[in-house]
Length: 149
Image 1 (cartoon, rainbow, N blue to C red):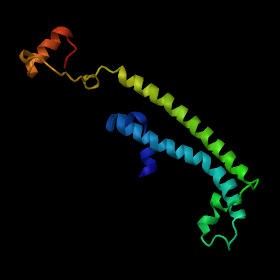
Image 2 (image 1 turned 90 degrees about the vertical axis):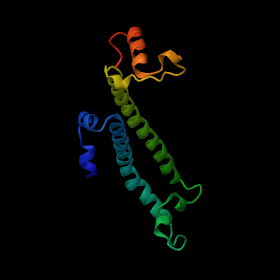
Image 3 (image 1 turned 30 degrees about the horizontal axis):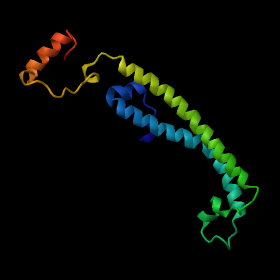
Image 4 (image 1 turned 180 degrees about the vertical axis):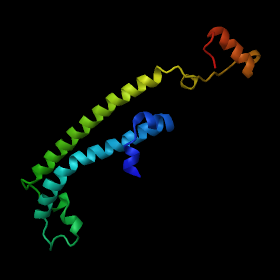
């Protein structure tokens, strides 16, 4: 159910679920893009390096043999992990920049819509003679003719 959900058109999600659902799904998709773009390096380079450093006697747990802790201190193979950090940072910045551009366009589209739900205000310390829905609506209709819902 996850893949069909992530394949939905943004406008369809926006129409059915709203902005919060769309941004959440885009965030989940962003996470998958970051993981998917870094995973080949991690599986093809880092895991074999870690596995080649760990010895069965030193690490009884297979998981421990596949982690950075299996690489000895001052080993030149540590540079692969350093390069991996730079690569992961660059990939994350790339995907975040793309999502930020998309989010900016969505936010501008949201702000230019003329929907009363998007322009809600909180009025505090209202004078006693204006307290009440009808009187307050009449007052704001005088201030902003035709713009009060």
